[in-house]
Length: 311
Image (cartoon, rainbow, N blue to C red; front, side, top):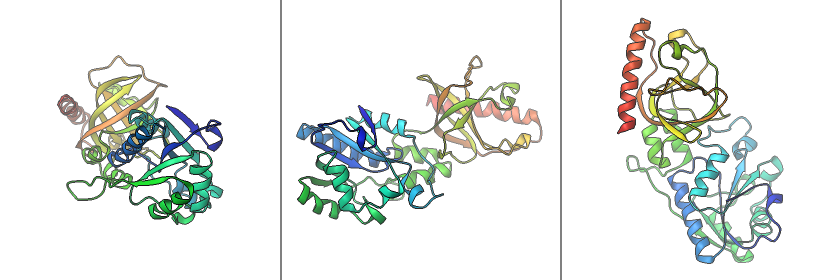
């Protein structure tokens, strides 16, 4: 799969393509439906399937300080899109000037002049252009002028509440610690990534050495508590008990994500990029009366995490 940053990275002589546009944070099941239809349409026409996305998130440019928690960094989104059959991902730097493009100018500058769109696939709530003035109807009207058609894909809804699958819904579920619900929307466990850094090393002293993960900026981190999941290092996924919080037992103030690879006390992970996948919530963050009580509860957490992951 080709990856481009900015319109200038698109190869000279790029032909017709099928395009979908969006932030696609998380590449959840609703996104997968749209991207899958994009790939299917591209195969029908015998042309490449292209996803156009943005960096930074448009809200940070339009309303500085409002950057939402991110469900997946751009490299992870690209990996997920490649698995869906996408041929190229274009990441457009979202600047103040770019945000001021009218819907028509956006279509000409991106879809017509550079990507030579034959079809554009979007969800029903898609908006684009200055002040989000464009929608799927205006996109289709412009297509009549610039020789592309528009396909609108209805999204999945969550069975429990009837809410359409969305990044906003997923962020809320993650923030609430409902990682099972988030996985329903994502189609996989929610993942947090980062570099392993040195912490206070109390886990090692207590018999459960943890990887202290310095998460990427704006990462959507689940609410404080203990979780079952996986710690993935250099392609190896290991069952893990995961702690999120400030470590009140030792009067901590900094919020951290720490993962103990179950039954693995031989690991030296400092400086490595790792991924932590959240499978199931076990309990909230607590302060225990004694260290022995804490150690007993940690042993119980590990047993439960092992059972949940193996299941």
